[in-house]
Image 1 (tube, one colour):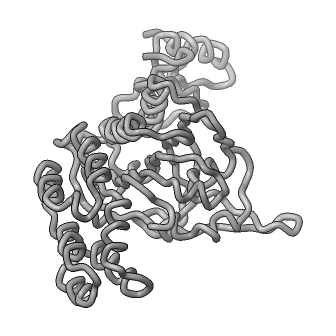
Image 2 (cartoon, one colour):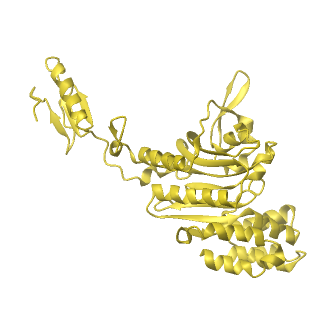
Length: 362
C-alpha cells in the first residue's frame, strides 16, 4: 500500500499502527478532533486523581501557569460543546507524562476515542468493541479487563461505609484483599452487601462465571441493571475479556463500565477508559461520556522494527552529483527507500550501494 507514493511498509510500526487505528475509527463514522495550544495548569491540578498520578510539567507565560498536556480526555471534555447532539470523536496527540515503564517524563503518543452526548447501551458496547479492535491492531495477544463503577458504588452505599472506612474498603478491592475487608465491614449495617462486596474481590475472571456469581443476589442488592450492562459488554468477545473489579476507576469521575487493556510483553495497562459522566458534571455539563485512550508510545519497545536503514544508497561527488540525483529518483520511482549521500562508507548488510566508482548502472 502507498500513501502519496510512499510505501506504508517502510513506516515504523508505530506509524503503521496509527494509520490503521485512524482508518478503523473513521470506518465507524468518528471524526478526528485536533487540539491546539497548552492548557492552564489548574485543569490538571484540580483533576489529578483522574490522571492516576502521572505528573504534570508546567511553565509560566505572561503571569499564567500553563502545562504540557499529560492526557487528552480532560482537554476534550473541557472544549467540546456537546449540547443536544452526540459527538463521536477520535484523536492522535502527543502527551507529556511519566512513562509507566521508566517513571521518567517522556513525550508519548496517545490515540483515543471519545463519545460525548447521549450514551446508550449500543454506544457503550460499540466503544468497548473499538477498544478490543484497537488492542488487536497493536498486539497479537491482549486482554481487556472490565469492571463497573456503578456496582461498586451501590454496594459501598448499601454497607453504609463513609470516609476512611469507605476508602479502606476500596483499597481492599483494588488489592484483592478479602481478609482485611472483613475487618473493615465488621460493623456495616447490612451483611448481604458486605457478602456481595467480598464476591467482587474473589470473583473468577471468566465473564460467564463472574456474571453467574453476581446474578444470584443482583436484584436484592439493586445492581441488576448494572450487571445486565456488564454482561452485554462482556458477551461481545469473552475470549479477550476478563471481569476484574480491582481495576476500579476513580469514583469521583467514573459512573459505569470501566476497562483497562493489556498487551503481550507489557507488564502494565496500555489502554484505559470507561463511562465518565461525573467528569462532565465537574465541568458543568449535563451530557454523558464514554471513551478510551491507548498510550501508543509505551508500546514502542514491543514493536519488532528492522534496523532503520534504506534499501539503497547512491553515493556522489562533485563530478557525479547530477547523475546521482537522477539515479536516486529512478530507484525511488521503483518503490525503494533511497539515501543520497556524499560519503563513501559501509552502510550495512543488505543495502545496495551505487556510485562508489562513479558508475550508476544496475
